[in-house]
Amino acid sequence: MNSEDFFIKLETQIQNGNPFVAYRNPNDKNGLTKALLQDSGKVYRTSVFNESGFVFAPFEIDNDVFLIPSDDAESITTEYAADNDSEVKKENQDFPPVFTNAEAKIQHEKLVQQGIEAIQKGEFKKVVLSRNEDVQTQLEALGIFKNLLKKYETAFVYYWFHPETGIWLGATPETLLKVERDKFKTMSLAGTQSFQGTSNVNWREKEIEEQQIVTDSILENLRDKVSGTIHRSEPYTIKAGNLLHLQTDIQGIINSEKSNLKSLILALHPTPAVCGLPKKNAEEFILKNEGYNREFYSGFLGEMNMKKEIKRNNNRRNQENQAYASILKHTSLFVNLRCMKLDKGKARLFIGGGITKDSNPADEWQETVNKSHTIKSVLVK
Image 1 (cartoon, rainbow, N blue to C red):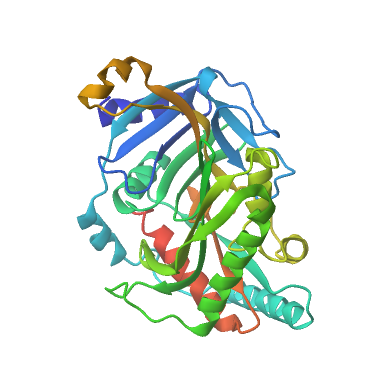
Image 2: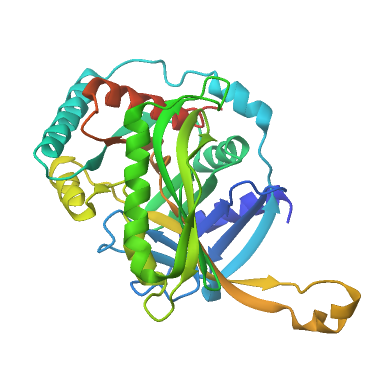
């Protein structure tokens, strides 16, 4: 489908009040952009995670987890590739004019100080503390989605609408979980610094420690759910928009006797990169002290148990097998970071950072400001 018709279909869905999601996977060579258009306004939820479709889950997973089922939705695709020139241009724009909201700064620094003191008392090792910020936008949702697609080639970019949730958009760099057959992949992502023209950078001890805490926690949570060894890469630097992060890749084989998709999701979510460690203590601190409802920020979203056709090897000896291409299920879930909720010309942005014993409240405030610039740059024409 050409991109103009694709985008018209999305607009029609909103006008009809029917749920949809449009999205593009990271590093897709041709910019393949997909959409699932639900054929009614019916509300589907999941708590078992064995359905096939697109799932949209909040930070507090005990709350509603929404689903667009494959069987009750039209699937469409188009190609809409990233524009690297626009990335350079947009990065250099200041939007809105840089100013400091003194009250927000005071509140966030106070929250971070509370987190540091709780760590010093031994309540947890790390906690991720966030804030939200409402910004006027010059663009409608579709324009913002196009900007995200143009700018974030290496991220999972999405546009979600549901009458129960409103409009959400984002470009997240973090994979929660990928599953195909009995193999799984996840990642440990933490540490942030601004991109200054090179990815060959030095990381401070605070960021290296923060990322190691995330890695160790993921490995521990997965240990009794896998068969054999869990493989992990060395930490390496990745670029997401105008920010750099430290990443470790983690993969292994699922033990089907001890685990299923739901137990893997519950073992990983919320990750230490959006919550903290130990998970339960950090989550309790966040819910008690952050002072606002995260909703779907730092939840997760993506394809769940979707059918995928795998063609067999196309050499002469295997030609008689061509009719038997295998259909398998795959799941590809992402942590809902770098996201916004759109409502009446305003974009509500959500920005957070990891707090450890070595954190500095003023530095943590500045990190949220840097992260907000990344997402604000897509709100301009």
